Length: 150
Image (cartoon, rainbow, N blue to C red; front, side):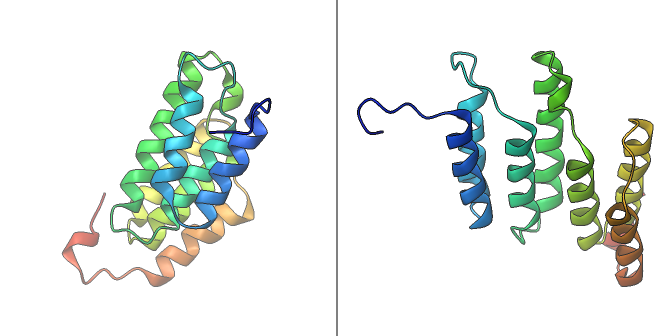
């Protein structure tokens, strides 16, 4: 419950999402985002809100972090297309986060595919994009069968 007479804004929701994300509470951050995505709300999520949730999953350390991030990026894309708001499509931050989490989880080939998709979507990669790929390959352990993800 809020304070009588005060109505939360999209900035309020974004701040709460980001706070949960910074504390590693990805599910709670996603729950707040889902509240913004409901059709009955006047406020709508921002690309920052989506990216905060994706980053929370990426930083969670969970084994399924890459899958959770991919799921959220798919939801982001679907929501952007459904709401006809191209500003909500994945941006350079979204792609860089996804590349980084895939690389850190030894899914380097998938990270490369994300980079290729980024370029195909006319989003200009940054130094971070390429550095994440190089870092992932430098730490890649090809002795483990489960690392083969092409």
